[in-house]
Amino acid sequence: MEAWEKVAVKAEFTDSVHGSIACTDCHGGVSTAYDMEGAHEGVTTDPDPLEACGSCHAELSQDHYSSLHGSLDGYYTVLAERSSEEAWPQLMEAFDNHCDSCHASCGQCHVSRPTNAGGGLLSGHDFRGTPPMNLTCTGCHGSRVNDEYKGLNETPGGETYAADVHYNPNGMACFSCHGGDEMHAAQEGDESPHRLDGEAGAACVDCHAAVGGEADTNPQHSEHHLDELACQVCHAIPYKHCYSCHVQQSDEGVAYYTVEPSEMAFAIGLNPDQSEERPWSYVVLRHVPIDPQSFAFYGDDLLPNFDARSTWVYATPHNIQRHTPQNASCDSCHGNAELFLTEDRVLPEELEANQPVIVTEVPSLP
Image (cartoon, rainbow, N blue to C red; front, side):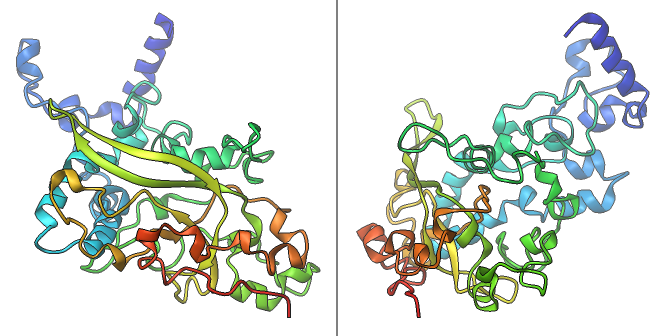
């Protein structure tokens, strides 16, 4: 950055609403100190949302603590189902060392990149009301959402899968579907929530309301299909699956993890989270990076109820296409066992956990 650009950025910030607030009001420190060491005592680069933002953005700041971005309660939900009261302390030690840094504060979206993605200011010290997708959202949701959405995943032949139709050529940003109300949403109730609890934040029919209506001439958009199949069943293409993540620490106490190579695949299965908001019988499933020994470094049998939750979970791939191999014709899908999560595609040690989602009889044409 040129010297004049630095001056411009500084002037733009100091002339803004946030520029009228003293540095110490957000970052701490001692404003009356006369030396650098004294002035920086107690300084934090990532201020607490309620303390730093709450005086002006009280409701948003308070909601942050129970939002999934702030609380990470979605992780606690699935771990609690697989673990036990006795194993929980050791499991939480592992969580604190390896998983807790994934949460995002207000500043990690509106001022800087998330710490988990390396940090760094977005635009000097300017506050961005709408954060830049490529520096914030995909900083954390990169290996799956970003690569699917932008068409960066490689095919077995060394080419790349097509980008999502909403990205290319339209170039829609994450916030076109996932607005501030969803990002800042406080979770209700005392129990730890999950991202699939309650109404979907973004749904295909929010924009494609005519699908299934009188003006819709597509025979595959029959009432039966729309009631039985999530949109992604017909309109997604192969997406990324991860297997067997194991968390560990080096001899020096540095936390790290290992994971088996990911796989590009497509899998239709039974809906594990069927509800009024998600009524479909069939959805696409994604394998998540978990196995019975994922936390073995921290103790024995920390996931004693591993089979309580499937390892193939409800997925919403961000690689939507109008035309896909499975919707080319009726028999492209009906009777095509390769598209479905059948028992032979599931690892032996995960068969019990995945009974609720395995397709035992591939749908055939009437």
